[in-house]
Length: 294
Image (tube, rainbow, N blue to C red; front, side, top):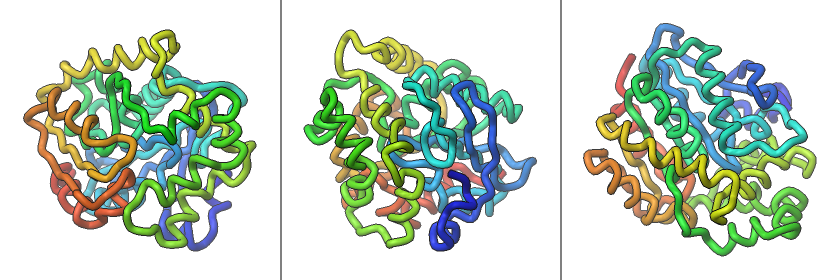
């Protein structure tokens, strides 16, 4: 799917012309919006969203002179659908390749959901390149906590059938991840790239890649990400959290506070997993102020 395939209502919310990059895992679609000479902000989404998640923040930051880069992870959003399982290590490598392709020497970072493990995986390897960090409802360390509904989606055979075959992850996310109902156009936007089972493989793969088992191949990768967090301790950080998130709940927020006690906190008691959807300008304004102008 390309941006030209989006409905007029979705395109009105996502008024970008994404570019393509030949990432290591396949064609990666990415938004590159704002002045070329503005300080870059790299925004990384998770599962089952795509760069549409960041649409309002992209526009707000670009309006204050920032260059905003928001990729769709390969297999997600408007990116290609390779016929192979991509793990956390692949996704970190893809983002590192995009950074090299764009020649980003220094950048600020924003992460959500799986974007946390990916983004901190990138930042932990090259902390000298990273400035400010926005952390929204995510994790970047090992945890034994998993909601029952997500555990079901990881179950052998039936889990993939639910997530990929029945769209039992991306579709429920449009109402389970928010406390305020999404507008029809916003709901259509989140779902636009995931209209059939054939394009939802990565949604199921992301769920299967959650390293709950001690023998899981991604467990040592996430453990390495966690071990690298200490090198980022001095970075300005904003923890923007929807406190009604059923997945990345208070325990994950507390995990970040324990590791980054100097981080600013922007907590929304009535917001869910898609905190920017629920909190709107109450989140976008402080986030824009945190990142500041170019």
